[in-house]
Length: 259
Length: 259
Image (tube, rainbow over all chains, first blue to last red):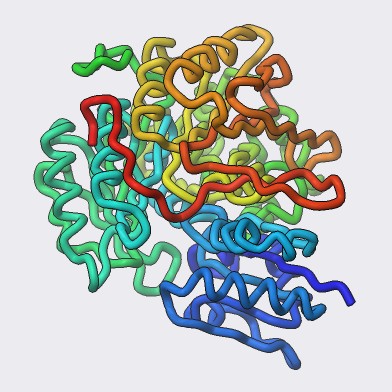
């Protein structure tokens, strides 16, 4: 009896962003394992066992998935966006790293559309040039490492996508991040707050770094902070401006040691 | 007569990574515009006009798409991965930026799976923590800006995904990039060369930064260079090791001014 673990990404919301590969995996699974709200987004299938769990227990979830596979089950571990980006694929790998006896299990990761990509599509093309993705959560890493990475991202003039910008337990980190970025980047740098893109409660706000109010963010928000080249394109008829980062960039010498 | 532009991402290769939204757009399009090999990957549809073009003419392609939409056509502009990541969405925005008269056209960007995500899924979870994506092409940006960004990426201890690592016109840039990264990062940093993931000629090579031979890369290769936390997991039975970056990180003070 040989089980499997399929680590799948549902995409940010609507079914039309879910790949056929993931849809097939959800059909084939005998068990679904994941954060409750993500499991709830999977279609019901007779006989399938749904193991919804609380937030912040990723490693418990990963161990459960491996145990179920060891018992011969076909387990889909579900993440909301791409399982490989701040999601369950790393937790599964941590569980495999800690348990050599599980490493002969059949484990596959199936990619999905991540939140920053859905946000970028809606906004125009803010990630059209070099960019970085940083989680602002300091549940598992020290805040000074976040500071180091924000500083480096500004030094490299990357477009910055911020994941997990705030939660009830950490409401102030996004303010600290913006306070720091305002000392490092121009005030007219474009900023976008893209919340729940593709879902009924989608909400997009555009601002400049100088004027942006981080109070609007929650855990469903992906924040994009532009590079020095990112810009808005005005549109007629009251349409929201496009935001994009050109493919070309002139060289401007860095103020730091880099370059 | 009102046309549309749908800027779509086919994903890295197999149809099972193409979202239903993109598949529907390809069905609805009267015209396909894109780099020839990407247009060739779209299903044939009677009456649809296929405008395949050469590489490196992205802006010409974008202008053609806008002109066709202005004439009432439904145009799918096709990119290989995600149109928002080093692909056609930025070129379309550049064309709109340069042509205010086109800004009332109905333009949508439909996201897709990008090459680094397919590579990450195959490898394990190398992008499981903070990462950046850098194009090594200096067709449109000066090489010193690439150097600045590689330096900042190392300073921030990001995982680094390198796009467009080499071409016939620029065979040496990947060697220069590795020479630089070897001065900035530990020799045992994990590296992966992931070529044509999901396609019949997929080829994945793992190495350390010290031993990696960039001669294997071509334009179909996505290169991933780990952070200080990235690691391999050995597997039994001759299986390729997993590569992942843990969700947690201890704080190690930076040698530079950041942090």
